[in-house]
Length: 283
Image (cartoon, rainbow, N blue to C red):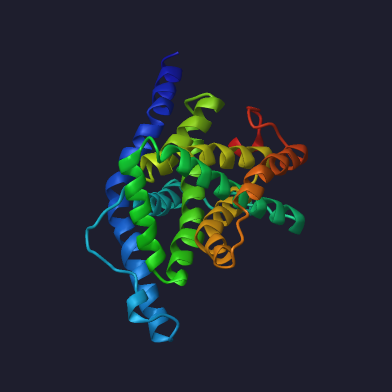
């Protein structure tokens, strides 16, 4: 009885323990991955002639954003789970990354496009209630738009989604699973995902997106659907939509409505139920 109590205590302090334990180190790592690394990459692209000086990522030492914690969390948790706990990647399913058929990849890309368009409507709606947040959101987006598209793609379309999905959908949610019900796990990981964007408006649609990404992962026992959908969502917002807008093409409503049949298609192809405690994703 005493042994079980001790084990239970260890389990229940897990999420808080992991969060506090990586926080300090994550701040240091994130300065490198969130600021110094993009700075060096854009300088390298400038050397080979792809970028001009005005397109360089502006590195500001110790300008810290909670968003960068994802970068630090990813590196530290990867270290903790694989090396410190003497866990080795013996096969390809450690991160639950399994191959996808081309048709499924297209399906997840379209879901990402649809989610991005739905986010646009959420921004329009919530901007009327969170005026200050909307102003900050618009200002930040204009700053990003001022950067070269290569810089944005590196940070927001490639690095960001990969880091966030592995850190939040995989590591953090699996820590929570030891102590909470499945519904609570799905909600808490979405809350972390939303809060990490440090804006009320972004927090709302990323919370919804966080739930969707987690459900996709659980349906398929595969992290790739969330990664691909997340990448596609950001890609549509920063590259595809502006490109179409130049030619007077607006597919916002089309993709927003399309999300319903797309999710139904994935639901019909699901391998497991999202709330199934025997889902192999938790093993």
